[in-house]
Each structure stands twice: as structure tokens, then as C-alpha cells.
Length: 409
Ligand SMILES: Nc1ncnc2c1ncn2[C@@H]1O[C@H](COP(=O)(O)OP(=O)(O)O)[C@@H](O)[C@H]1O
Ligand SMILES: [Mg+2]
Image (cartoon, rainbow, N blue to C red; front, side):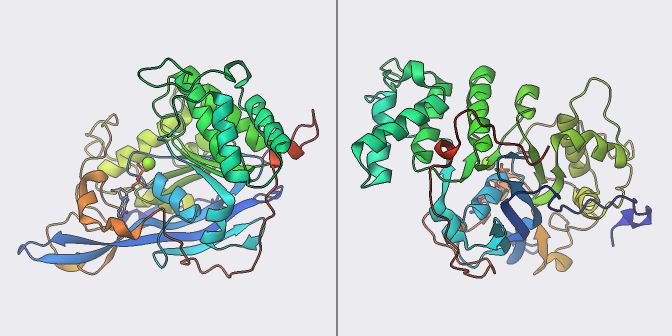
């Protein structure tokens, strides 16, 4: 047991659970992704260690909502998204995932969802309309040209691209659409077939704040029209934070917070860390996470608090001597009460499963073949229920003017 066990358990148990007004979406239980890492011990011998890149992540992402995944660099956000989206190699990911209450296999999720990556490969010499028509031809197969055009028109309107409909995508040489518009076009390409589940890895990276805002606003509209949207996002502005319905905060592959963005301040208060006046509560929580991460305690007490409500230990002044504004990626941390990966005494750590210890630093130690976008994974214990969601173009099914109610409110 960690040294924080002397603290009395808090009365509020914050085990992530699906709210009463949950109207469907994605649920995940005990998602754990373990990789084997090689490292040298004190005698210079290579030893194998199991490391959890994701450790027992349980939660949900409701339909009609945007779920934002946040956390410091190297926290496991992209890994988490990959795991949910069925992009982790078979046998490596443990846990269960269900969609609208039915257990689903990762391969089914992979086939029926859209995964939008940061690097958008678009043809500079095509216009916005031509790009989306090309995607429609490619992804919608045999439906009539009129139906394809209608779908593209709906999408152009939905993504706020009407004024740039006939503008070239462009590149460094040819003047084309703006960065935000470009990102919205690439989202359009990936959702042309109307998937009801959308994963976006850092959709705002590299964009200025106005463009970033425009992307998330459109994604928000898509969610409200009935899709389940899960995105990773780094340092969102306060205005973007308002567009997130649900937050999942990770650090070192562990769940630090799950719930409404509005309740982050409450969570911090219960933890004994009242948000200072004028500070943004989400930013403050991430600062607190970094403080623990760089202290001897590590982030385990915060994971424990998120799970059981057991109050974490107060950090002593010398624990906090390292500034909270340490740049990412996280530097190697000092010895730790529960994890021993950085400890000089090699013995106790050998063969033991650890939580994620460092950021990109040890990347070369991993076998990258274990995670491949081309793998079809059968690693979840979820039964192959045969459940298949019929793909419909969800947004256009919404009668005109009818707003989707946010089940989270
Ligand atoms: N294929 C892989 N095998 C092993 N470790 C990996 C692999 N991909 C990423 N990692 C490690 O997992 C951690 C989390 O990475 P990632 O999910 O990309 O973080 P984030 O998206 O939060 O910045 C990092 O320490 C990274 O080095
Ligand atoms: Mg990432």
C-alpha cells in the first residue's frame, strides 16, 4: 500500500459510472494495454519489464456529445484513442468495450467508425467540392450520383465550407483554403459515409485559435446531430473547453479524471486543491498532475483518488520544488512509492508490471510492431455478439431545425 493510505477515505466515491440520463454511446471497462519493455539493469544485462501504457481505464463517451481526452504529452491519449478505435494489435489490449449497450469487437469498431488523424493528405489541385466528391465516389460505392452530390452538399454546409466550395485545397505553391478549412475538409473526407462514431487525434494541432475553434464548433454540431465523438486535445482554449461535454484526463496511462468539465473544480476541491482565483480549473488540474508526477509520490495517488475517492497526500514544499511549468515531454521522474522503474535497485522491478514511467524518452525500447493501424485486433474479451450497426448518414437524418438534446445536461 502506498504511503498515502494513512489518509482517511473521502466520502465521495468517484468511480466513473454511466450517468442516469445516458442515452447510448461507447462504454469501456478496464482497458489495459501492456507492452514488454527491455532495459538494462545495474549489471548491464538486458531485462524485460511489462509496462502498462494504459492501465484499467473505465468510462464512457455518450452519444450526441464530445468527449475530450486530455493530459500531458506522453500520457497515453493517442494510445487510448487507438485502443478504443480497434487499432491496437490483437492480444495486447485487455478490457471490454460496448456500443449502445452491446459488447463489440475492436474490428467492428474499426470498420464502422471514422478515425481522423492529424496529417491530412489532400490533393492540392482539387477544389473542396471535388475533394469531397472524390471521397464520396471512393467510399460510398454504388449509390447514385445525385445522392452522392446531395451528401456532399449537406456535408459542405455542415462543415461551414459553403463559401470555399470551389476553392482549391492548395499547398505551399498554390494558394488555397485556410488551415482550419483544410482540417474541416479532411474531417469531411473521413465522415462522408456517415459513421456514428468519430475519433479525432489532436484535430486542432497546428491551427491558430480561431481556426481551432471553427473545427471544434463543427465537430460539436456533428456530435449534436447524433454522433459519438471522442477527440484528444492539447491545451484547448477556454472557449473550446466550453464545447467539450465530457472530459477524460490521463497521465502515465492512468485515469486522473472523468466527468463534466464543469466539475473539475469540485474534484480539485475534494482533493484539497482549491482552484486559485482567476485560474482555469482544467489547466490547474493538469498542473497539479504534473506536480505529483514530479514528486516522489508520482501520479498513482491521483489515480486512486479518481477511482475510490481516497484523498491524495499533500505535497510538501520540497516535493513541489520543481516548477509546475515544466515543458513536455515529462522528464524522467525520481523514485516512486509504488512504481520502481527508475529505481537503482533492479531486483524488485524485474518481471514486474509497471505503469507508464516516462514520455517519448524510452520509445526506442518498445516493439512498435505491436500497434499497427493495419492490424485487426481480437484482443478484447468482448463477445462477438454479431451486433452490426447499420451505417446511415446520421447527421442528415435529423429533421431540419430539430436540435439534438445533450444527454449530459
Ligand atoms: N507502439 C508503441 N509501443 C510501445 N510504446 C509506445 C508505442 N506508442 C507509443 N508508446 C509510448 O506510450 C506512451 C504514450 O504515448 P501516446 O499515447 O502517443 O501519448 P500522448 O498521445 O498522450 O502524447 C509514450 O511514452 C510512448 O513512448
Ligand atoms: Mg498523441
